[in-house]
Amino acid sequence: MISKKVVLTGSFGVGKTSLFNRFISNTFSDKYLTTIGVKVDKKSMTIEGEEISLILWDIAGEVSQEKVPKSYFLGTSAIIYIFDLSSPTTLKNMQADLRLLNNLLPGVLIRKVGNKQDLVTEDVIQQMKKKANPDTFTSAKTGENVEELFLDIAKFLIS
Amino acid sequence: MKAQHDRTNEELLLDRIRDILLRDDRKTLSRVEATLQERQRLSEKVSPIIEEHIHFLKENFPREFQTEVEKIIDIKLKRSQEKIIELIFPKLGLLIRKYISHEIDMLRERIDRQVRKSWFGRLQRWMAGVKESDQILANLHQTSVEEVYIVQRDSGLLIGNASLNQTIDKELIAGMLTAIKLFMEDAFRRGEEEVELIHYNFYEIFIQNFYGFYIAVAIRGSLSLEERDQLSKQLFIFAEKELNVDLKNLSPSFYHQINNKLETSFLTKTTTQHNDQ
Ligand SMILES: Nc1nc2c(ncn2[C@@H]2O[C@H](COP(=O)(O)OP(=O)(O)O)[C@@H](O)[C@H]2O)c(=O)[nH]1
Ligand SMILES: [Mg+2]
Image 1 (spheres, rainbow over the protein chains, first blue to last red):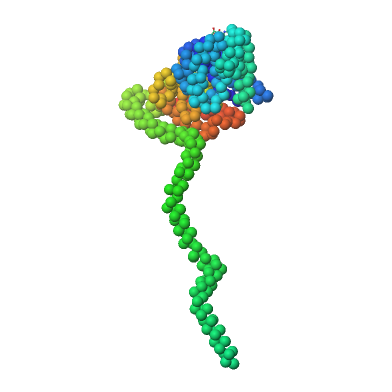
Image 2: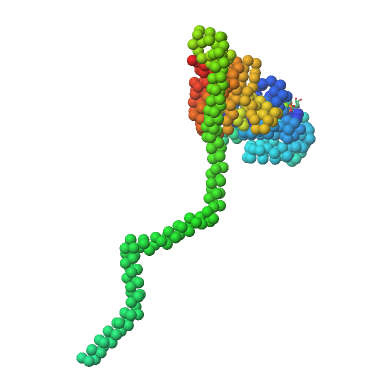
């Protein structure tokens, strides 16, 4: 069996915890998130006969990555960078954040995710495609593309 | 006759001139021939030249090739740096531990001397026949190891585990424990210091850091300093023996093996060696 560390990150309120909770059963109380700024959970999947466990780190997220301990990101195989489609300010730090993460973890798999798809029109989605070029659009509320996002990452990590 | 005689004379003369003119060349030629044919003599001639070249290389190699060689060594060192540290870490730790345990022995001797003086000590020795210092240390702590985790230091991924109870997912515990550890290390920022002990209700989690991983031991009860040192030493010995492997490329069978070894090394006995006696 393979286990990989995957980190969810992005600005405050974009829906990291909601996506996390949508995808896995909650083992630890959210109390940890507020006290130590991170919560860990696990999702096991079987892909083409091979078992893989994603050890997911939900990072509370300040306004930008600067304040999050860098050590939380070490040893990570994939990063899910989430922004809020209905709140363009959550895109503001994306470039700088991604540059920082790329320096810290050269060659790490990064997935840019536009969340809260249910709150925006098709026009906004087209606009965001041009502006931020995300890998996928999700909704933690309806569950749209959530399972697929994690499955896609697991597939990538197993190969 | 005369003519013939003259011609012969002429010929002789020519021969002699030729001889005189070519003598040196001929000598050289035959010498070269002989030299080439005889290995021994050839080597006598060639060896000094080769030696001279070798000498030149010896003298000038550093200057001519230094940067090249340094580049190669640099790359090799960088590639194996982690491996070297991983190898040295437990050995160094054991050396330091040896020194500390000597100091503790001296301390125990001092306790012995003091206790022997008291009437209580005499009474106890008379009744039990046990060394007083060990008795004192052992009475205070009835501890048992409940769980052991070997965890990759950065990622928090589980490398090995042995537990008395099998309730919660061990991979999750390893991740969360790592998160808490990182948080504490970041929050208190005491230089390069790392978390060594976490208290939790009636439990103590002792953490021994190594280079690319750490080992966390959950203990019911509370460890004395000496017990902690003893446990730490055990962990270093275990690491030196069992964890000298490339932790980034572990085979599936490794997990199984290491779990069994952890169980036999740490779970079946109490941490205080005094209690065993
Ligand atoms: N409508 C809608 N609301 C969402 C979605 N994802 C999260 N939210 C809401 O956004 C708020 C912040 O979400 P949270 O997961 O706490 O964000 P975090 O700070 O990134 O962890 C909460 O009120 C969520 O209910 C989504 O996909 N659609
Ligand atoms: Mg959150």
